[in-house]
Image (cartoon, rainbow, N blue to C red; front, side):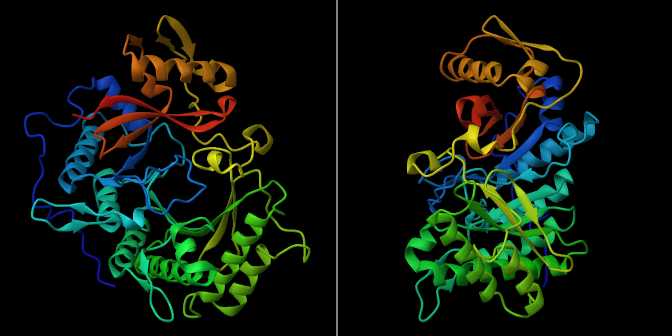
Length: 409
């Protein structure tokens, strides 16, 4: 595998020459943004239509111009050095998310001369400019009908291979998501989707093999009921097993395949080492990838399917929680004071803040005293050219509330 970084030779830099990114941010805001950074999104929207999407992805897909990505991320790295604030300093063990409601394998950003850049180039940019591990999750490279097997998009596979290489430079993570409610599944069925997922996984393994330090790699699935005995979970487990059987022996030894099969054995063959109420990572020593299991929560588009679990029953990991820290400054929103400790400990108070922030910050802009970027994780939405606040609201049944904060430019 020959890996070259397209970052250094990017043909242009400034889409907004009269104003650099984050010029409207104070130094305190810049430090907070850098320290609490959670995600940098190069693309919004998705065509896969997975029922389990946290953010109810829009069907219209938009991507940032490549020059916007380079400009914003390089500026962020420069500010980190100038302000002596490490990226994600206040987000322990974090990885830079490269997606929220999109599929990174399908990413295509356009350069000024009409060339395309994908998740491999974007991962190289994150690694070079920010020096942080990043995370990529895909539900499979694009494919079209073929005889007898689907024909894979070579560009998607090459980008994922390169992304795995760059993720390996800084301890990142690559996940292939097995879902029975994707566009692939509806088009190709279980056997064809397993073929697509296996070829996708092999491309990631190929890129990881070339990296000095391979990234974490997972075959990812959702459990649709706490005990996992519902038809959708059964179909998902079947897809996982088919995918494992499709992975070429060059990438997965027979004994390793058997070990992974035992982790997801159908009932009543044995007691499974996972449940449907928490995020779990299952690994077997020596096997090149593991299995990640997540509860299918009643959120996002999943809420509209009527199949998800209630948050109160699932007891999910509060993965977009308020960050602990000191000092516990007050945040004044429309004349009401909130503190980090209160928001972290009291779901009702957090719910009240989120509802108020949506009304005040998004719809009726008024004074917000203090710096909410020190309270919540931050997301840079490149296509939308905005910085958003990411907030969890288990009390309101919303694990991923997004509040627009401020334009990048």
